[in-house]
Image (cartoon, rainbow, N blue to C red; front, side):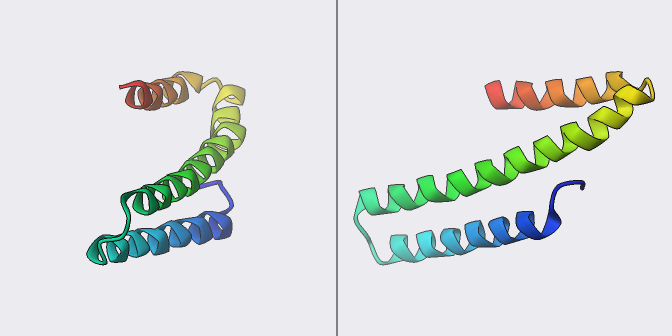
Length: 87
């Protein structure tokens, strides 16, 4: 992985902590909107990590593949991810 591993790990650990908090909120029968806001906060962290990893991939792996004439595989990888995102 070419992304900043320390930063990615920190964000993932934060998201994990938020998920643990969500489970406690559900067990404690907290107000629905409080739970929902916590879900949104967790999703935002995961989106940030996702963007960071993709940016690092594009700036390193994809750039290298283009420079060495092996871009088709990387194009197919990115298209596969886009298809997953768009359902």
